[in-house]
Length: 69
Image (tube, rainbow, N blue to C red; front, side, top):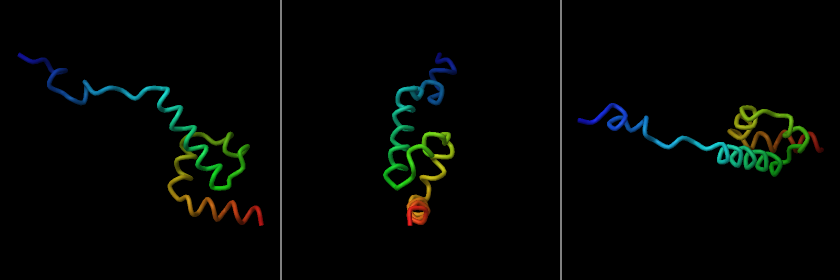
């Protein structure tokens, strides 16, 4: 007979790796910088704040353009 772990696919799925997460976070930072945010400001933000900003990229670009003008 099969055990619980063999039947439950959620328990046998591969876990996310730390390296992949770090790469994803770096990509998010690069996207914010490309939108016009200051690199020093992005460096001080935590990952949750970065993800929240990237949900509305047009709004971020507009804020950055207003600061520069």
